[in-house]
Length: 320
Length: 258
Ligand SMILES: Nc1ncnc2c1ncn2[C@@H]1O[C@H](COP(=O)(O)OP(=O)(O)OP(=O)(O)O)[C@@H](O)[C@H]1O
Ligand SMILES: [Mg+2]
Image 1 (cartoon, rainbow over the protein chains, first blue to last red):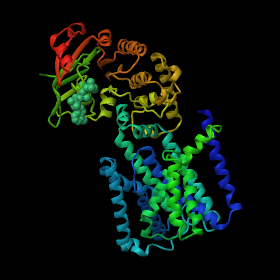
Image 2: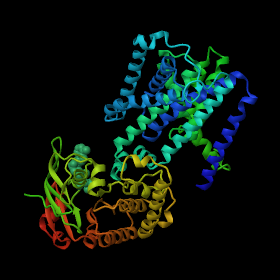
Image 3: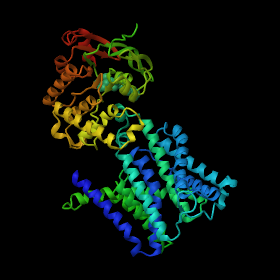
Image 4: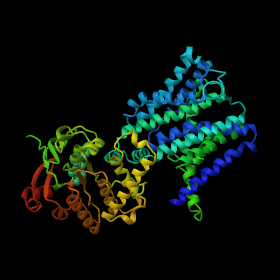
């Protein structure tokens, strides 16, 4: 157990060190790919919480992501509010939207919950398309201000790709630490118990419904914050953000990386986003190759990449 | 009939129907505080379902349940555990297999150490100190039941009998007033059965915990219980000391028929 912990901390520290020096060795395009990976990391952490810890499959993640993006963009465009405020507001609004959605949805059984979140994603997209006075419909919002790092007005504007990268990295580190804090709290232990055996969890006094709700709301907060960074990086947002493609990418990251693990989801964000970028060299077969690779991953390691890797590291003498 | 408000657990007219099947049929039962009450009966006689109805796992079709004078009818299971301190085990050995033995105990103790919902999200020094306290307590409980050497083992990997002992230990972490055990000795080797009986007796004597024990093993029941209730087709057909009950003709008949 002790060695496991050391392995984990060492792994994270090493990986973080790599990421810190990476821009010095990489071209602009590769740094961009890393930023995209980090952008997906936040909603992926949220999905990991609701799916990996509370055991409920939600398709609402990208809808929360989109809501966060729109909220953040509109605040910056209309009121010129600083980035930190937009970022927090995006998370809070997404979490607040999750609450009334969760009240009926979480009372349902697992499959009905999935349908409910799917329905929500469709409604969110329709709203973004048709509430033209606010969202400008299919045109979307463009010229979203770049992030301003200042207390209120003014401050440093994030411009260059490297500054964006370090901002993304800083936010991701905070998000990972927040995630770690949640899952290692007593509430996190209850969530794991609920995932493993809901009846047993209730039998030791866990109000299961409340913890599932907490996981759902927090998953929305993570996604909303991710959306905020996304929109200030791309500086445009349109209803296509609600397309299933993005939601699927999240599922791939979490399931492929290792659902219910932190390292797996971090690794998954980089591996699968990078993979999709690398495959751009062959645009014709890109999606087919991507799909095939996913199938290989599923057969090769059904629990995800990281759990497989950890097992290998633990027992290096046993070749599987 | 009025419920007995002084009893640790008092059931009045509990009924449970599954379509046309009547699993529990108008059961009235009072368990006085401090008693170890056995509950037995043929397979399918409604013992587990009666537990389910008392602990909020299933909603009874009819009837009322009182715990130490408080009506708990219709409460959800986690609330009955937290507020009425009535806790139950399950017929299949259920432990959280992926967690360590100790973590299973810590989990069960959390409801005592963290009574509020918001407090469970804290990770500060105070929260960690409480968890440390739970680990210490867990060590003590494991020592008592004789599972100390398994403390850090994965709960899914210990033997079936040990899992049943583990399940019993987790319940002690929750400071219960009443423990309902559903077949704690089924499939367990004689040595561990012996140990289970000792543990139940000690918890009853030292902590004043009231027990209702569902069990088919009549020898164990005779050794353990102050009183034995027999259920057949959802109805109570006998209720007396174990020695008397096992000789009653309707009990013998029910067993032969069942
Ligand atoms: N969910 C259910 N749906 C339909 N019938 C059920 C259900 N649960 C229990 N029953 C029926 O209710 C009756 C009582 O079952 P129960 O499990 O309470 O018996 P038991 O006394 O615990 O038996 P055993 O000794 O085998 O554990 C049985 O006839 C059973 O088939
Ligand atoms: Mg039963």
